[in-house]
Amino acid sequence: MTNRADVIIIGGGLIGLTQALALASQGISSHVVDRADQQAMLAPGFDGRTSAISSSSMKMFEAIGLGAALAGNGCPIEQIWVSDGLKPGALDFVPSADDGFLGQMFENRFLRRTLYEAALASDLIQLNMPVTIAAKSRDASGVRVTLIDGKELSGDLIIVAEGRQSRTRDEAGIRIANWQYQHNAMVGVIYHEKPHGNVAYEIFYPSGPFAVLPMLDSEEGRHRSAIVWSVHEADAAAYLKMSPRGYAAELETYMGGMLGPVELAAPLSSYKLGFHHAGAITADRLVLIGDSAHGIHPIAGQGLNLGLRDVAALTEVLVEGMRLGLDFGDAQLLDRYSRWRSVDTLLVAMSTDSLNRLFSIPGKTASAIRRLGMGIVQRTRPAKAFFMAEARGESGALPKLLQGVPV
Image (cartoon, rainbow, N blue to C red):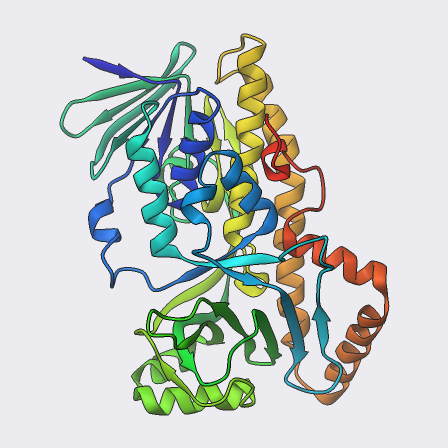
């Protein structure tokens, strides 16, 4: 028996579930297929990572009905402080009272649970997980996905949200440009003595960027922040073998003692850093979103938000097509999505790559030039306003959901 929905979303992570919920808010049904066990992924020790959600992404979450569930569970980012190795000449981005927060920090596990529970409660979303896909097909009549248990799903369009190692993207013959940074990101959560004041710190060292991102205090009232530390891949294993006390001492040195003594609040994890960008983000009745389409350096914390921009744009394109009576897999719709997103994602990807390379140049002369440039930006109001708009995700041709208005 065939189970039909308007679209089939392959990948049930943060981006895939958000896409399903955004479409459901507009009356569009979906199958979500994922081989991962969601219950295991919601376990307390599964994922200690955090994500910075921009103010525009928050507007979309509110627009699709998740505002109440998210309210009060994220730590506001009220200021971003940027420094070249803790040397004089730092940049500080502080929005006006009218502009609101630059973003909010959420624990990934909380976001995943919120999205999963909302999807479970939706009549327009059918969750097929954990399950293995046996076969996929696309032709003029639609798309079909056959599961290993023999169940067949059908629809008009396949939306690929599988992540960086997307098998469906590769099977469609879509090539990617990619390279490795020879660095690993070490991520974790720390307790610290002094309150962070809702400030996000980005400190650039020649060995890699070091970010300290504010989190809500623990249930016991202890001050917490997330750490994203980029180190050379040859050094990552040695850092991970350090004792918690030794590692905390290393963190204090890199932080310049700005938050007082620190200690680890959760086990550290590490992952390789790389760049990739798909040569095309659509094919016949197929579209890529999130990390399946692009993967960027975490230097500006925009990876998840870039995927959420994909979600908002694709939702708007499909809703407008539905109002015109078009098939969701119509080539005109997919072409519009491709033209809308391709330039934006490439510009963001190359900007973060260039920023990482710029701050990785060692030497006093390079540092002096960088600090001179930072000083000019600090004193130039339009330049600071531009960078703050980028941080909030409010630059460029924004989809309606990111503006918080109906599609």
